[in-house]
Every structure is written in C-alpha cells, then in structure tokens.
Image 1 (cartoon, rainbow over the protein chains, first blue to last red):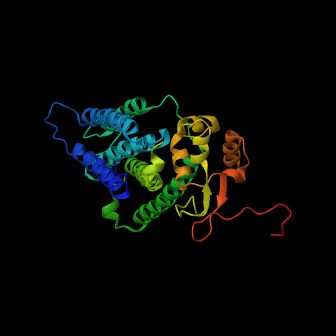
Image 2: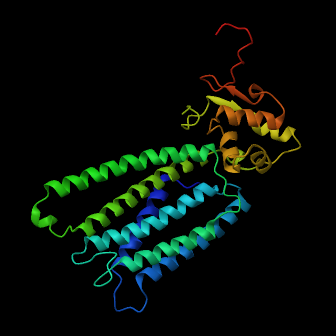
Image 3: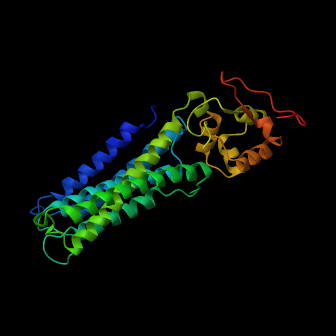
Length: 211
Length: 91
C-alpha cells in the first residue's frame, strides 16, 4: 500500500478547507444547521479513519502512531473550522460569536464539539509519544511559529496601511476573530508539515515494514 | 539533527532487525514496549530513517543485553559499515 505523501496531505487539507467554505455557504432555508452537518461529518471521518487504520495494521503493519493519528484529526478538524470561520469573516455583515444576526458562532462551536467526539473515537489506550514524535513535533512547532509570524506581519501591515474605507468593518470583534483564525491557519500549516515528515519517514522498504 | 534523522540513509546503521530475530524472534511491538517507544519508531529505526538519541540507543542495547556498538555502527560514504574505534586509539 503506498504511503501517504505530501500531495495527498495537501489535498486532504484543501478538501477540509473547501468543506468549511461550503458549510459557511449552506442555504439557511435547509432544516439542518451547517454546524450539525460539519460535526456529523467529522465524527463520520473519524470512524472511517479508525477502520482504515485497523485494516492497514492487519494487512501491512504500517498504521500510524497515536501522535500521527491525532495530527490527522487536527488537520481535518481545523481545516473545516478555518474554512468555515474565514468564509464567515470575509462575508460583509457576518460575524461570529454574536448572540443575534447572521452568526457563525454556534456552528463553529458545534463543529468543535464534533471534533472532540472524533478525538475520543480515535483515542488509543496506549497513547504513547516517544522521542521521534517529540522531534517531529518540535519541527512542526518551528514551521507553525514562523507561519504565524508571517501571517501576523501581513495582517498588522493591512491594519496599519490599508485604506480606511476597506478597514472600516474591522471592529474589535472582527480583529479578534481574524487573529484567532490566523492562529488556526498557522496550526494547519504545522500539521501539514508534521504529517509530511511522518510520511517521508514511512517511505521505507517493504521488508522493514513487515516483521 | 543527524543525517539519518534528516532522511539521508547510510550514516548510522543498526542490527536491530537481526538482533530481534536472534532473541526468540522478538516482535517490533515487544521491543517497542521494552524500551518505551512506539512500534512505528522501531520500524523507522530498522529502516535507518531515524537515528536515536544516546539514551534510546543505550536502552535498545540493554534490551538485547549487548553494547551500544554491537547494535549501532557508522556507515561509510559507500554505505558499508565502518569498524568501531578501538579503545586507546588516537582519534
């Protein structure tokens, strides 16, 4: 079975973001809230991943470690929420975490709840993390840190130098939510970097993969 | 990070796989549990995609009841094992 590689990881990240965007544009006339649908999809994805990895372990013994499993969940979960919140923030008149009006707050929290259930589904009894996981996590932290610095620089420059009329809708609420989303975007890049590192290490000969 | 840890094969080699089989065909899972790492790290070590810390190298050697340089060795530019440095030899 071919190992996960960087293009596939990027494709899954992009698909998660697009799903979030689609949920943000969910027609209000439909009876199902986008947050409920997003949460259900995350739980469904977790159930599928658990089955897929169990099969992979039985067939070729190269299923991911507990740390890598968590990263897949973080990638998909934060991808959906980032896509959703970014789309809500970019829509004039929309805001999140507001009690009234066109709000995405409840839906983003519902999806976060779905991600928590998905985390529980994928949790392993032996949730060990060893020095190799810590080394890859440290690499991901560096990538995430510099991504966040870059994103903050761009946003701060936009706040300082963009034409006043363009920045008028950036209330304190919107700035706070944009900053929150930028942190999540940096996290998303971090997860992609870490998963790519795991994937690279998995490209080993078949003989070593089997006992 | 070592060259092996960066994914460049052929710097730090090991005999983990052979030693496992010489120790009653110890499974990767059993070795992982004995030294406190994940099975996936044992796979990465055997494929020489990951160079362990000194502490982990010692724990692995302990698990097989041998010395660190009985398990790990340096590889030359052509990938062949280099002989260990003798005691008392001038570096």
